[in-house]
Length: 130
Image (cartoon, rainbow, N blue to C red; front, side, top):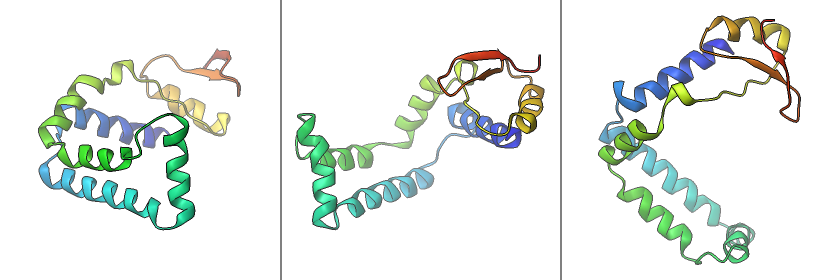
């Protein structure tokens, strides 16, 4: 768990300045997102599943097309600017789920800030490491 948190932090910090997204990486991501959207409309049942929330929430039925267009119009500069503005690890909160006896010492050992043990409702039970 702790190594995953370290990797996650490295990725977020990279995206927010140290390692900006390049045009090639963005293009691959855009292609993947657009293709995954198209796959959600292959059968009548899938079309109904996609249209139901649009109708329920009063959204235009062309919302999926507009989303694809919006994805395709983003540039690497747009994405990097958003990452610099909104990805702030000093304000981030990580929710870690697992065997407390295994993960607690490792997560506390990272020394990144306060760590709390919470119940399944999110109520703080105690400060971790105490």
